[in-house]
Image (spheres, rainbow, N blue to C red):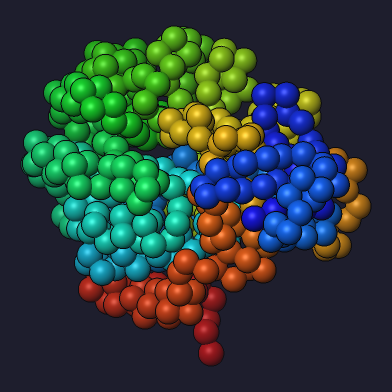
Length: 461
């Protein structure tokens, strides 16, 4: 398949932008890349799609996703973080069935595809969500995913004295690890290599420290990925200091949980010493600007991390803390918040933001040899953005236009592993009407089981 007449943001090492560009796919790979005129002459008779001058770029990579939270978006708006977790989010999730977990994952995958995300890291799949069902949705959707299976054994959150909702507690940490390894044997490398199985530990405080040691050892034996929330709130630091560590990052370092196959989400409350440890160990960070803003967790010091040489990627987090899985919408927040934090509008330009959402995300997932940039021989994972809209006219700089002006709804076409997953905004791999209808039915059933009545604060008449 030949994609012609596009402005191609390659994200290659030279960061080339091809005007009047074309891209040829063969099987699951990019077979050629160049000017449209040249490729049309080189491959006469090749089936082609005319991109009409629109922007073609690598698929976006979301490095921190809660798929189970798509179906409960908006359930806890305008609440404090502890109230948000203990009285709404965990109560609802703690009443999920396997079928609910699958339905929410389908809704999440549908939204991600329609807003240009082609790969993601699921950070923490609880037993009750039904791992197999979520993996099946990934397989069907055509996406790439690293599915983090939960490991925990304590009903605690950081240093909080409150106890987690019973339905969210996994009391046997060793059983969590054993089940994760079984799922690794079943699913890792499935779907033509698109699925990975990772350890997805709860935040320290919810996991006996020795379990971190066990996960780190087992992950290294299998080259498995690991992910965990880190330094999201100040209570994380207080917990770490209560067990003799300098910081929440230091706690993970002491338990060998850092390294090039580890992704830490948030890292809001970190400092220069933490960044040096991250850089030295090759640990990756998933920055979640919208989630951290909504929950008032703080603004992560990502400019300091980047300057120290830490690989920083991006994440949307979950439906209740962000209300969307649209990475394009969040691109501008990365730059805006960094400018606000540093009181300097030049600190994090559009180019850096787009790197975080593409090639940096691929590095965090361990798939940068395959994805994250458009180069001959790499997998054909890319998206086409329709620029024929008032809010995208005119285009002085295509990178700035995507980072600061575009929306996920501007994505017209999605290709993953050489397959057309969405064309003209119609998702071809999933049944959109059925997914939406099931989510609209199930979210009320979950709320009823949880004994929650969630309604507008203003009178409904």
